[in-house]
Image (cartoon, rainbow, N blue to C red; front, side, top):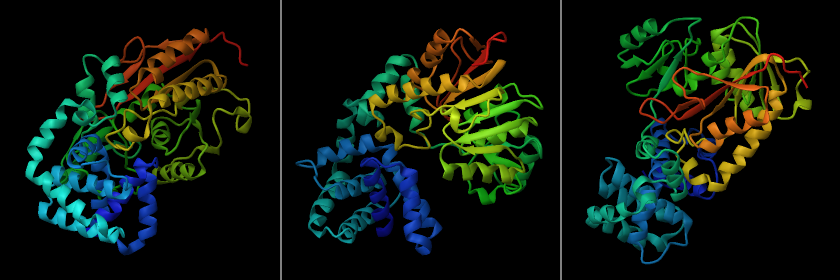
Length: 430
């Protein structure tokens, strides 16, 4: 437990200092090597994710328990982790407190032993009163930054509470069946034979009753299924694919949508991403599926780096965004993002979309996609683009509105936005 608390609190501390949780955990796994058991790794990950998911609540409780703010970030993170364990896990309270006190020594800060012990025991004595007292503060009650809550309330006046609540749920494990190799019904039978509960969401998606490691998924290594959120599975079918089309998957990494495109149709696909490490993930995903694409490591917004001048019939522009729709899977995003980031991402999206649009053939279609739920990155972005590009026509999407398809966070899916644009067939290439 001591090493679990020490490493989990270290991860939380690094995130609160501005680092991405996935990167922090990868560094921990690399540094610890084989010294951690699979169970310890799982516990560190669960506690890190949970502490950040409920950080607004935990921070507010901690503030009530301290006479003055803690200046030592490592001890503050340790207390957040211990409070998470006491409030949101079934770990015995005496074990959490005792191990937290021992972790203080392991961190080389023995002078804080008394403080940590007193704070945690005080919480146990007065937990109901402390929890009730923070309900008046939205950032504590919902565990989001105030600016985020205000924005969601403004943009979704009838749904904001539901959206915030959904974002704090544990993410489901959803599979995409590779219909080149099997079908949903056959794969459900294979899962049932192994005692795994699951149900279909549509013709390609299956949601598991309980998440499992990928090595337990039958046929995973042979490409029968991929792990992909249900909302992300909308992308490839919306592209209106047909054999022989020339297709661009810009910002392709880690390759989930890339593989889905090739599972649907035999197209001439070019996959681009500027991150060489993440492009290795694209190659690995396609290799497991037995599929192939032309892959280029380049910035899709800089045509001179990669484009040969031949236009594309279909383009998937999975735009860089705040990722405000996927916080179930990445709770650190809530605390890493700032209000100003929304406008910064929107500007980047507009610039890249205008450039990539130039590579689309007249009559071709571009699917604009984000895993954001903020309007500035979604319907407002598309509306501004259409105003500035008379050759762009927003196409209707089943289940969508006049502004595109909004998929809000739910128990079965992340939040996504899709806008399907078609270029005027009489438009000139430039």
